[in-house]
Image (cartoon, rainbow, N blue to C red; front, side, top):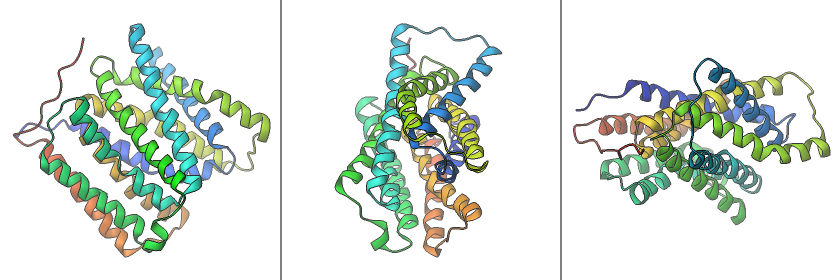
Amino acid sequence: MKRPDYNALFAVVGMAVLFGASFTGTKVALESFTPAQLIFLRFAAASLLFLGVRFFRQAEKLKAKDVAGLFLLALFEPGIYFYCEAQGVKRTLASTAAILISAIPMFVLCLEALWLKVRIRFAEVFLIVLSLGGIFLIVAAGGLDKAFGGTLLGNVLVLLAALAASIYTILAKKMLSRVEPITVTFYQSLFASVIYLPFAAFDTVTYGLKLNSARPLLALVYLAVFCSFLAYWLLNFALSRMKASFVSAFTNLIPVVGIAVAVLFLGERLYPLQFIGAAVVLCCVTVLTLVQHSGRGTKLPAPEG
């Protein structure tokens, strides 16, 4: 059995925990900000934080093709991902969106096999599909009639968001073979700010800013510091060390954490079936970790350049 990369494991688990709490943070922040304003502000703030970090370390020199690649990366996520997700959720049920978004690991698994030519084992496919079943139990606990629905357009937009996130994961995996995680995450935040600036400016001129309390501002700070800055940094660090499909499988922990945070801070109801679903997801990612670090682990592509 090959030795686990504990730093990468801690990073991917930390990423899932931080992103899991983002649903509650986003819900609170949207009390005062439009989606475009929120996305721009959180990534602009994250860019400033990365500039502060880069002040204490030598900036990595990039080639023109790497800068173009990083812009493409940011275009898929958060660019296309957040837009499609926001527009899709408006037109479908939140529970339906959660099920569709949890298809990301399956998309990544297919893209990794076809694009990166990485050998995929049956055990990995089985565990990812089983974790998808756990997500189904979590979101369908309140009744099947409440778990599915919405318009076809809404569901397609959410699926496009999942696909955009999956393409981002594969592009990031390739980019991280030659560029440091902190550099990738910095440019991702910077370009995301540029992409969403005109939309945020339009919303500000049209609707203004409505800060009625400190709660939305505190939520914005959490999303900027712990999600756009730290969680994406941890995600990219994990991608630089692990298979893309393995890292994406941990995104199915995000709804588990999200429900726990919603129960604790928003007083939402927790169904018994959700305990089972959460247990299934936790067991799947635990066993997947053991499979990933078994003696027959899959070899990753050699770094480029």
